[in-house]
Length: 145
Image (tube, rainbow, N blue to C red; front, side, top):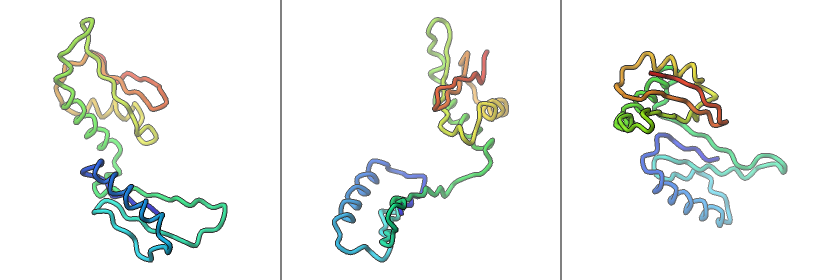
């Protein structure tokens, strides 16, 4: 079982360390009896009593800073994105400046959630339109000047 603890500070370094550890693990004759620690971000626990036909790779992602309030998370995410992209809002093509945000949390937060969040945060920007795009390709308007 692979358990990852988010947030991960240095993804590239962790990826290299994880690849090295998994290669060594595969080459081992006997399964380790204790979980293997990869820094403070990953634990690998080996279970050697699997039944044929059952899933053999299991993973979990643990977030030490998680918050179950979906609207609060949407507010933080939108405020962060708008603050980071505010300077882009001054670059207009065809006299308009649009911002499209990819919603990878569609199962948790709908466009309506982001619309509500946008109305309750105060981050300055000059975008004429703000859109949210789902991973399935659906585009919804959050804001229009």
